[in-house]
Length: 143
Image (cartoon, rainbow, N blue to C red):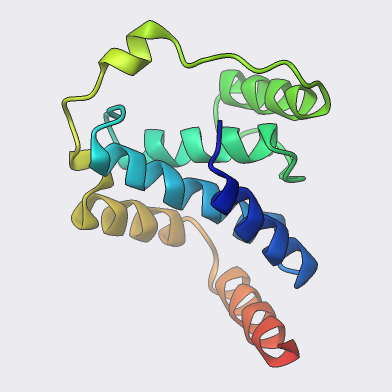
């Protein structure tokens, strides 16, 4: 279950007209903190990001599942399931297995996150990155 502050920050982002991915970023940030605190362990930065996005979808952020070919079919199915879960109110605790995996914290290290961000950026075209930068600048201007 996400913390109240995280949900509030995401809600504020939504009110400011920011993209769903920006709203979801708050949940990813919370997940990184959890790993650093030793609440649970993710094996890689990618996994930590995936957990954060899953939480965001379940909390009601309208973040669409990844497109076909971008990720495995399993990830897309899970994303669809998360979106459905956001509409229902029943919540579950994390599994025992996940709760016990608290040792590795390197997934949320500055270096791991930097590597993950660079890898994600490399997959995007220059035009796509430019468009995102212009959109961010426009959002900042509105404030």
